[in-house]
Amino acid sequence: MRLFILLLFVSLNVMAVEWNDLEVSSEYKINQSFPLRQLGPNSSYLDIMEGEKFKLNDIIGLDSINVVLFELEYKNCPGQAIKTDMEIIAVKNTSPVVEVGAQVEENCKFQVFIENKDLMSESFFE
Image (cartoon, helix red, strand yellow):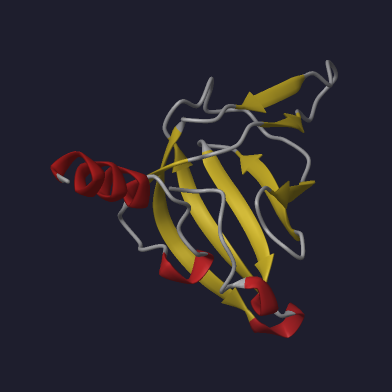
């Protein structure tokens, strides 16, 4: 019985957090991998890998376009000058599928844009 309770507790702690429940100044791990195309002459990809850590710095409502911007610090950032294109990312385990815009800006700012209507869905953070 104790093992069952322990497993239940552990499994609940690794579940994705809803976008609406993310808290400023908290750290999160990303639970899926995806590439972002870097800007510049080489056009290589920056791979955001499952398990990487991010710290949520700000949540900004962009009401004129019905979107919320989550600004995070990319803890495993490969360089302060890295910038990527915005890519549309399908959040795994969402039904119907929720898509967000994601990009990395200078100074290791990881930005995620999500439509207001999707704020109550699972994020790709745990």
